[in-house]
Image (cartoon, rainbow, N blue to C red; front, side, top):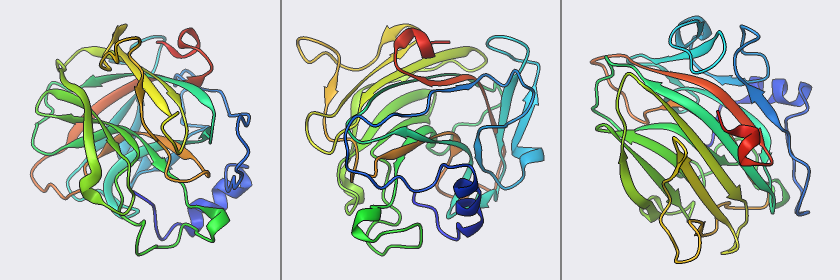
Length: 267
C-alpha cells in the first residue's frame, strides 16, 4: 500500500539517503543488505510499526542462525500508515532493469491463528516522481496491491502479483499454494529482474526447492513487475490489511539479505 501521512518518515529517509530515486536509467547500482539481527538492534531497517517495543523485539529464541532473530507481533488494532501492519522496509533495492536476489527465513508461531490473509513480504511500488507523484494520497494509485507479494493464509503460502495499479481485481496467484508448518523455520529466496514490460521475471525457492512453476525451460515467471520506472521497495513482517479484534499473531524472521546471487542471500 502506498503510505500517506508520511512526512516524518520521508524526512528520515532523506537524512539516510534513501529517499527519492527518480531515474529511468537501467542497471543502477542497488544496496546490498544484511539484516541478520546479530548487532542486537534494528539499525538499517525502516520501521512501519505502531510500537517498536511491542511489534519488533530482538530475541534469542527461536533463531535460524547466529544468536538473534526478530520477533514480529501484530496485535488487534495495530494501525499505521493506512493499514494494519507491523513491517520493516528496505529501500534502494528494487530498481528499474536490475537483477536482484532477496533471502530471508521465517517461523510461524505455533499459537498463530489463521483467519485473515497476511502479507509476510511484499515489493511495493514507489511514486512516479517523473510524473509529479509523491507520497501524498493519490486518488488512482492509493490502495493498489503490490506488484509482487508472498501471502500466508490457512497454513499455506501464495505468491501473488498485481499488474495494474488502478485495478484491484488484477491480482493473480503464481503457481500453487505451498503448505507451511508452524513452529519450524522456512527459508525463502527470490531472484527478480525488475522491468515494466514482459522482460521482467522472478523465480523463487523455499527450503532450497523451486516453488515457481516451470515454463518448459526454466522456473522463471515472466511478467511486468514494476508499475513505473521509479521501481519498488521491499517490506517484510505482517500486513493484514483489515482489522482483527480477536487475537495477536507472531512471526519470527532471521537472515534478511539482499544481494547479487543465490549464495549471497540464502540463509
